[in-house]
Image 1 (cartoon, rainbow, N blue to C red):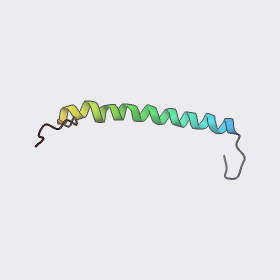
Image 2: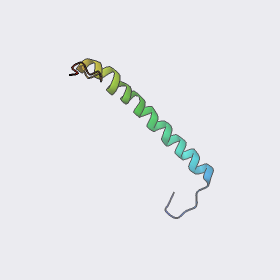
Image 3: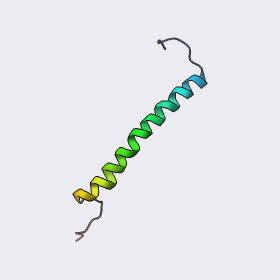
Image 4: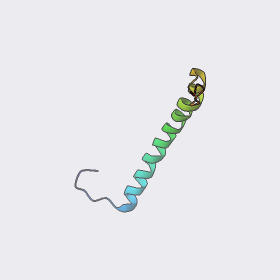
Length: 52
């Protein structure tokens, strides 16, 4: 596609859905690892144990 060339709504939707699926496929495992797997190993699990 070149700048200024027309694109239909459905063509835009198809291309956007593919990009969205790829982004989610990359982000979901990263977030799972970052906040569930690695957080437990480093002791950062979001619980406040020293409240005064």
